[in-house]
Length: 485
Ligand SMILES: Cc1cc2nc3c(=O)[nH]c(=O)nc-3n(C[C@H](O)[C@H](O)[C@H](O)COP(=O)(O)OP(=O)(O)OC[C@H]3O[C@@H](n4cnc5c(N)ncnc54)[C@H](O)[C@@H]3O)c2cc1C
Ligand code: FES
Ligand code: FES
Image (cartoon, rainbow, N blue to C red; front, side, top):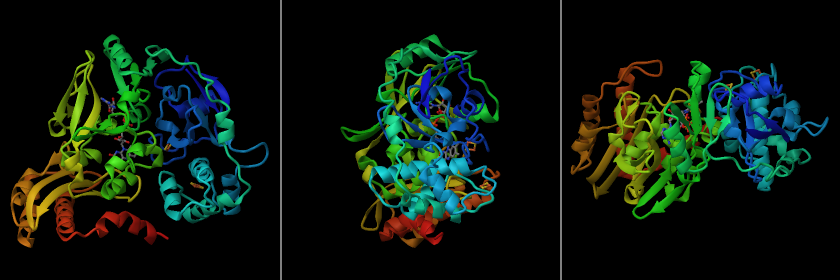
């Protein structure tokens, strides 16, 4: 297994399959500028930039939850790779000038996130990033002593320094990697890490390795390694399989590959929905969206995952493929059996998700409630899709996350609404019906009573917004961001 670290080739074949990129950087390569804060993707202290060897734009990721094997054939830039000799990178100069650092523990992570933004601005010929873009860029980086104002100031002024691209150094490495043997284990050690490039190879590996565990972005799975100290005997990374990624129109459906990144869902023309864009911008951080996949969100079977309620409202089906090469489509609502249990059997994997184009085109609203606005898991997630003929409801689908052991439709509320005149009385009855069919838990995020009240409140908000053609709530995210200014 080989990759470039700040332009220098690394050979890691003897590392264990469960090694994270951060562990390699700090303990293997001596690059201790990259810090470990939480080891769970939450603080951003471990942020580095990653690019393919084809000159593509480098993206920020959390190295603490990225498996080392996922870097095969790619390029990693750490904070040690930014300066040109003794001259700091413009982001570093701006951080110094704006007093953007005190204890300095978070600083390398902020600098790397901002270096990614700097590079994007440089590449698109922009003089300065907008405030919204800056806030979005550093939403996955926590600072506990400087405060964010000087860091935001540094981001606002970084383009004013003499320009410096890190792309030149990266592009020189293009094509330096030999093509990999598809079905060979990349990382040896005690355990094995595979990175197949086709579904055929994936099936071959799954047949040979019954204990194999799939990893896509690792933003859920790698927490098992860093928080619970699990050591997986065999990891099979599906991020290099082209047929499992991308969004396409297929007949009456929109089909999304299971390994499609959130980053690639955002603003995809086939998924033209302000409500979805709002939700995705609040799903994790930029570092998470650069690694996390739709299929991982579904297969992880968390009751508080953000995408399943959306997909339930959009009548989604999932494609389940097996080692024999067979694929069957199943409605998403039949995919979840119980808390963290799905119908997936050993040797099976999710290959795609599809929704009818007509379902995606129906008026809809997606609402996420979380304790913190950015980079936080939902307390309650509500997805509503509804079609009206005048004021009569002709079609409706409502789904919740955080309200039951699995993401679930609100069938009683739907029954109240379907065919009814959408007056205030009907809305009140639908909201009341929600509390008859859900018995949510109380936990660290929210009490059961709060969840029930919010579920009814969000439904009321969505029904009123769709009935009255009110779009203000869709842009609530932007409104909150402006109010921070
Ligand atoms: C800091 C942080 C913030 C987060 N914020 C959010 C948030 O706001 N909202 C939210 O919903 N989630 C959030 N998550 C959770 C996570 O990012 C998402 O669930 C993400 O979609 C998981 O995708 P992945 O590709 O990283 O999955 P992985 O971690 O690679 O895999 C997750 C599970 O799914 C299995 N799997 C993956 N792909 C397949 C497949 N194709 N077929 C069968 N099984 C498969 C794996 O074996 C594993 O069990 C957050 C996570 C972190 C660390
Ligand atoms: S160490 Fe906190 S996000 Fe990686
Ligand atoms: S400078 Fe101390 S945590 Fe940010």
